[in-house]
Length: 359
Image 1 (cartoon, one colour):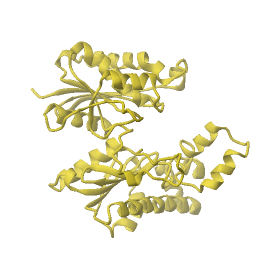
Image 2 (cartoon, helix red, strand yellow):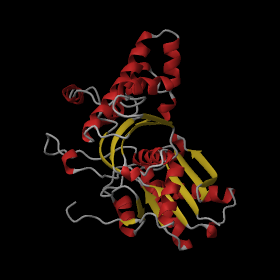
Image 3 (tube, rainbow, N blue to C red):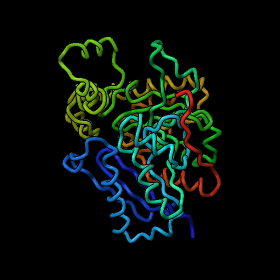
Image 4 (cartoon, rainbow, N blue to C red):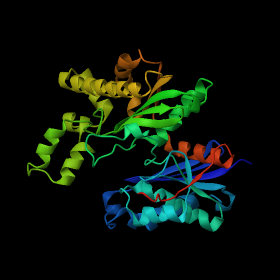
């Protein structure tokens, strides 16, 4: 019998649970949460009991024998002071998530829910490739504003998982390659992967606009808007994340709808869509300089990578740099399970979360 792993992934509006035996997913289920479901919780940590009960209900529904589990892994959220890879959930990590400071996101609860279920079973609880993972070189952190340092914020889990898949496809090790991975989702992020480490990236608020992100915009205009008195901080934040990009320009964040608009002769929709691809290609070009042009593959992934028009437009501009691999979609549950499996098999070692003294 192989290793059995429970995967828990709390999202902003859903809770997902999956059960793997080795590399095989035996079940996966997602429960969506309406605004009414979450209305009674003032802060995300207040949702802990609610989310934990949902996971336990799913386990019961699928008649899963918890005593058969070897490990539980939760989605790692915006935890600071971590590198990529696996971490064993410990008291220090739980304290940081519950007491802060930590940027709010439902995925932060993944570690605590996993540990709450794993502890009575005397099995380990892990997180893996959490959003807050940071492998930047020091040179990548410097900005022209002393109060601001660049930090890694990209789709770490999917970017690294897809990097491994492409490497395996070509009979190579991810840790031996230099790749640029463009995650094309609701937001776009582009990572420069140097021998298995994301040493720099273009964040979703610093590069191309995307289905629901504004991307990079001239800062002086943003400052003018912030001090115009017309917008609250929340409204400005929504213009950057959630209501920017295609949503703001074309009143939809669905690439399929935009392509239908183009097919129906909408020239403005065509201009906007081509501009989004153009900007994504520019971000890939930016990361090519980080790797000094030494690039084995350029990889396009994420939900928007299902669009052959979009990926074709991007590939046309970047294929001169390296072969382009298109791997549409993402599978966070599989990525979490496979990372945990590597730990259980001794192929990787889970780190211990420690608060740095000079934080």
